[in-house]
Image (cartoon, rainbow over all chains, first blue to last red):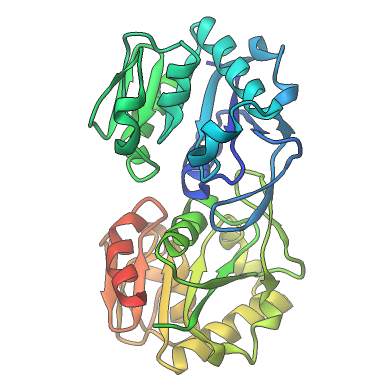
Amino acid sequence: MTKKIAVLAVNPVNGFGLFQYLESFFENGIPFKTFAVATTTHIQTNSGIRLQTDDVVANLKGHENEYGALVFACGDAMPKFSENAGSAENQDMLSVIKAFGSQGKLMVGHCAGALLFDIAGIANGKRVALHPFIKTAVKSAIGTDEQSVVDGNIYTAQTENTLCALMPQLLDALK
Amino acid sequence: MTKKIAVLAVNPVNGFGLFQYLESFFENGIPFKTFAVATTTHIQTNSGIRLQTDDVVANLKGHENEYGALVFACGDAMPKFSENAGSAENQDMLSVIKAFGSQGKLMVGHCAGALLFDIAGIANGKRVALHPFIKTAVKSAIGTDEQSVVDGNIYTAQTENTLCALMPQLLDALK
């Protein structure tokens, strides 16, 4: 795969999960671009560290074909997702997920990532790993208790603590 | 332990390692303050993401007694450490490591962390985990091939990829 990976980072984002992806991509020569699920590129980690992404999710819309895969980096923004689902950035995020998924691109996410893939309708009948608290919330995908699951183009991990189990297969697919 | 943890982040820093510490501290209610080993709080990860620390290492000097432990977050700044060892920020870092170590505080680090503890003379006779490439570079400490080692007040991991093996013991000691 020579195309760049688009990485979505919610605000706040879990830095442990986000940088497990980014440092691995960097070390393996896999190009990526980060997009904040926010109206600004200035976001924070759960732990309160300010960081800057390359761009915002609104500017990824319509450019999905420039990327080979989508990564969703979860964070403390997600427990309040249902309250904020109507915000422009969350609607843009779902639109982008749907576009990537509809094109059959490689979809990657941990924690609540699989739930978003489910909501966007791009993981129908696919087995997914996701946070135990939301296992029963997925409707069209199949929630599991596994640490990580690869089913077709859907790569998911239960939490950032089990992402290490997913990374070898993910890197194989991306390189 | 109720005192804050001082976290040193080199520039560039490996974000995977740094945030494995910070998100765990955050989730466990362990207070911390981050210090860039730089002249500015604006540093980058190896993977090129800009982030901002709370302060710089120069301002940690003389305030060591306000903290209960020191964490060294390694990064791509370190392969060039020998060339830049004389810089003000690196001299400040060694001074701070020496002060924390001399007071018997809990010292934590991965990758080249143990080498810095060795250079600062605060791990004499202690077994350490460190990057395999620098195992023979430590003089007064005892380099090992282990993924993680706890010897007295010295908590070390081979790399950011083995830090997960150290975290449970570290969190037990810090809580």
